Image 1 (cartoon, helix red, strand yellow):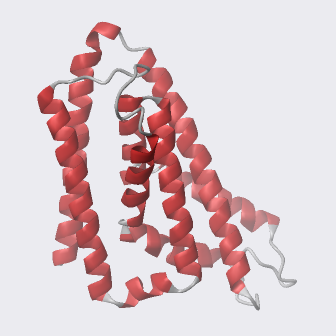
Image 2 (image 1 turned 45 degrees about the vertical axis):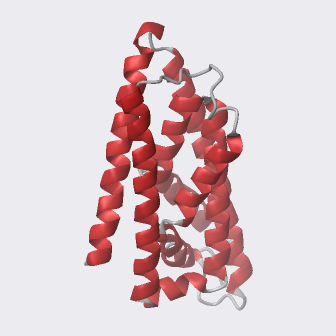
Image 3 (image 1 turned 60 degrees about the horizontal axis):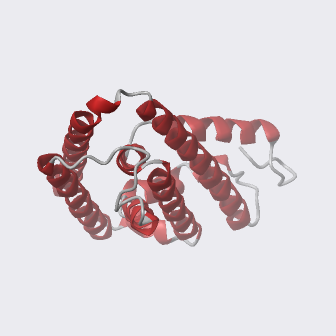
Length: 222
């Protein structure tokens, strides 16, 4: 438990929380896919904007869980199914956008000016909505964070918010490092191969987002 008998934060359990958070961040998912995709298409600025949007979504999820709103998703099948449906529709919309770009064959080389790169607010919004419309993130905060809060803590909300903030900060740092590594690897690619590579990555991203949307819809139907 994070909290000991005195109600303080235990260093050993806190270190365990940090390690567990790193493992969760390193597990491929929708947020990671979106961040890498935006970095490859629009450069580091686009990837960083998407990562900031994802972090903002996580902050809202943490606040909602601390206030008990996430509990509604855990006990209300209709609310959970509705959020899953919205998330699936949004993922399909992202998949269609990537598919159109791959079909049109208009490359967006990393490091070059592009419309998406000149509008970081659009990338921020994509990251925010992708995170907010993922019910698994809300349930994650509800199920994971409380495991590190001692049962003897009188007021659990401040501790919950502290751990939520720690998770968001660590996740943001991880995503920004991922953006930098993706940008670095993309620049090592031969320039003449970038248009074909860009179309392939856009097509792959479209397929992955569509598959994730299908999984959400199947889970909703079940």
